[in-house]
Amino acid sequence: MKRQLTNREDVQFLVNSFYAQVREDATLGRIFNRIVQDWPTHLEHLGDFWEMVLLQSGPGAGKFSPVPVHKEVDRTMNHQLQQAHFEHWLGLWFGTVDAYFEGEVADYAKEHAGRMAHILFFRIMEGRLQD
Image 1 (cartoon, rainbow, N blue to C red):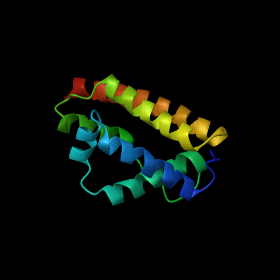
Image 2 (cartoon, rainbow, N blue to C red):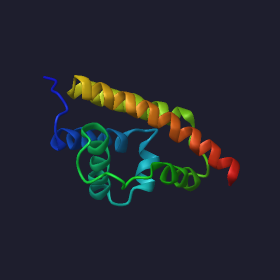
Image 3 (spheres, rainbow, N blue to C red):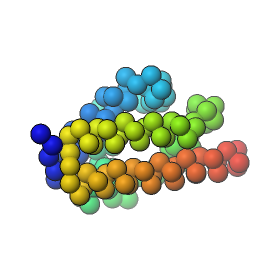
Image 4 (tube, rainbow, N blue to C red):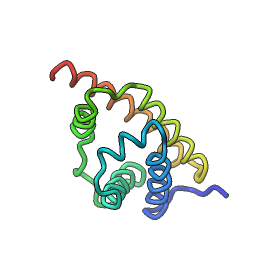
């Protein structure tokens, strides 16, 4: 039964469920498992981020700067990140959201992720021109 995204526990469940899939994914797992050294801390950090975005609460305000982090990931991966990686990430995210949640906040989780993926990819491409 699907439920509303209403609290930190819901957000952390979404994040943990999603990244469990990412870690096992043939396309994304090799990237994330190479970059992330401490999964429990990373998942908590991502929970903070998504709680801030989706619920406008939690300890995340002012703590996140995703563009430089993703540019560094692209550098670490020898500039091999492609739009297809972001599209695949979005497909898994949408599927995870839809599997467990419904309602306005769930819809916003997908909308925000879509915008974020496009912005991050654009900024990565822009960064390659500067490298």
